Image (cartoon, rainbow, N blue to C red):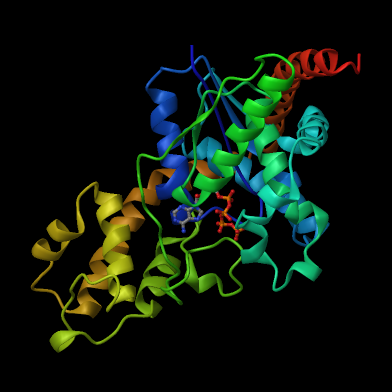
Length: 330
Ligand code: AQP
């Protein structure tokens, strides 16, 4: 039976881009009952590839766990865990790192987006894709639902799996990437860039815990052009701001930008933003209510994570032992 593995960084409160682009799909896959196990990792070791404040990081980990549970990742087959609690991730990363060449790593985009020059890149940020490969392979995952920005990293993970299988023994299934929704939500303040947890200006993102008034305010302040006579229109190149809101609205309603445009053709941009805000508020209402509930029960959240850490470690330990034996390290 297939095994699914995915993760998200605790670099801030998860936003509607994370939800529509990744979390929602994982919930659907979980509910399809097609997976024996779903490993969902809070990838805190990845988050420290850029500086983090320890107190905020601790808080982000708990907030992320609450949010993921609130989004519905709470079925018995789902193993929600904290990456740093399972040491086998870094152990396998070292082993895979010994098969990875600088030439291959040079071609991966991650460090280029997060560092101004190669001289300033930390070893952790540069070798991030090796740890990412280990995250997947340690659970012998077959399916990995991640955004289309991860295509090259997944190819690299497959390359490392093949290398290991060829040199030693076919231990790892070759994992495939599942990207059903090619959606890339942009920042409300800078619609050329993607919506991001770590964007300094929090008005650029709608966090899953935002109140209805905060959401209305963020939509009101979202950067949009005046357009033709102040009316809405979809043109992702020419009118990225309004098109981004239409994309969010369409994803929230499960419809298409064309449908949204024809339904709302009579509205001015200002009126339309109010309409889109209400649709977003409606979708987030139950999620927000569950987050409030879970934040009042921190012991429950901690116990879900502890149990997840234990199950993840048991599974990871088996792969690690087999790998070490094959290499001659046992
Ligand atoms: N704006 C987005 N639109 C659609 N999908 C998105 N994802 C992230 N931003 C958007 C998807 O969310 C998953 C988890 O992301 P991550 O936390 O591991 O890393 P990220 O892509 O770097 O997310 P952020 O929010 O931009 O965080 P920071 O600010 O720390 O870099 C991934 O599957 C991603 O595709």
